Image 1 (cartoon, rainbow, N blue to C red):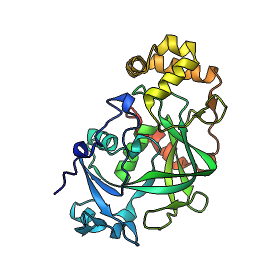
Image 2: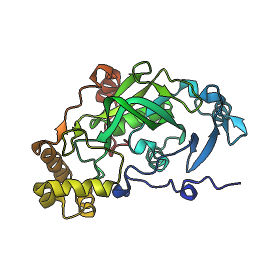
Image 3: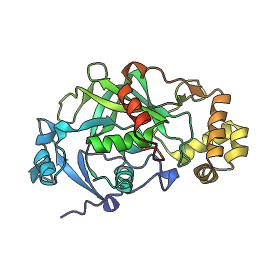
Length: 287
């Protein structure tokens, strides 16, 4: 039997521990993340719960056997950053003592672009964020989280990210089976989107070292604060909240930050209220 461990598959990067690996390696095929393993899901022309795990058992049956919530009672969440990385997701849920059993499926999503957030994350990297681009089309990983997992991810995202509900009729989402999702959650940055030299959103999801080198080259103030290179950036920023705050402030003062308002009509306000009342932030973002 093929070794399906994350290490054997080359999917064990954890950007929270190694910031320059952000956003980590995403799963490229429908899978069930099971601890430190990534099991294959066989696509069928039917609902997700009827797909087979390793050609042996239907996914919902497998979840029931493990005492886990079935797919129909889970929450689809679109990932634009390290939420697509099995290594990062496994690390974060394990750290919180939550079972790591998560279906993860690449899905064609219309109307969403992937950019860079206008802030420096607690781990020291510049994370990704979605923005509305009606002409865009991309394959993005959707993770089906149970309620406990979703609440844990909410807590790690807040306050740097907020959660929106995207309706499938406005943002078409097509599964590998051809099925269309009725909707999905997505996290978007509270800090806006970084603009590139042409004033449009700077593309996200690429090599973190290249991104940080470009930002250092474009701003002598950032170079003085976090330079001279990407390694020094993540080392300094990862241990000093004051430097992260100052670097984030410089993003704005350089005129690089575009406001994030297009997701506000889709904001899931109940998540914000619950977080204010019950769940303190737990640290670096899963985005």
